[in-house]
Image (cartoon, rainbow, N blue to C red; front, side, top):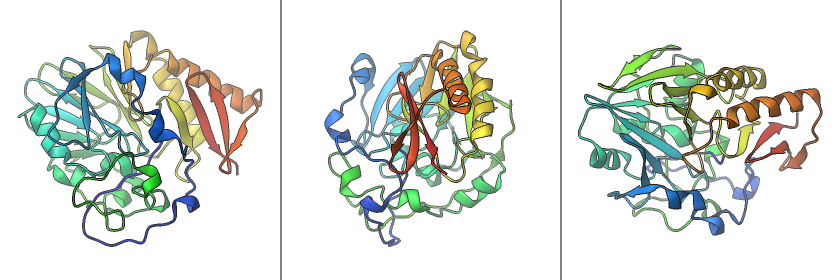
Length: 309
């Protein structure tokens, strides 16, 4: 993935050295941008240069943060009466200003999960949907963990930070869930219905978002092209395997996956490939390599990064 998040506000926190981080870091990552996949997408003007915005389908916008190592992607889905913002990024840029440049409709925020890089802008919004888990509740208080402390060190930034943002002074602002969501709950945006699919594993509160009519599945961190992080303490590999099997059964009816990192478009057949990859890992029929103390199993277009413990 590349994950971690941050919000630039005025509470000082000491920054752990990037060399001490347990997250893998490719020192050449910034040199590989822009990713070639973006050339085929329709770019949309944005009022905040921290972001790039792309129209993926009618009424579906990818809000991409290319200047930080996680390359996190949030999504705005616009109906006739409401719009839903799926994740709010790392909190460095002005997410609300970007969203309001794309729609004037009321906004519902729903997080794919509550890791830092997906909830950084939550506090900018008043209507927030979320799960009722201990993990979600703890993260809603704005607490940091070890994976957030290196988010803005120079090795993780491509270009410059926005004016006023200081790497040594940040905090995620707390937010409040205004509506508790349930598995298979449907959200009517007016002319567009989205279905919540609980996909725990990467975190206890991970979920995906299905636009069944248009064949779109927003996968969060359950799938994205690149190393899929399954080594953090809150990851449950057994639950993750069940979730992948669940979404893989949806693939025949899908036309597009919209992941939360790196690039916003992927082939639905990849879910079946991830399911097969997990089976190989469980069987021991594939050999992993050591990556920064974790075990990485490489496949075509993605890898599984597991704890060595």
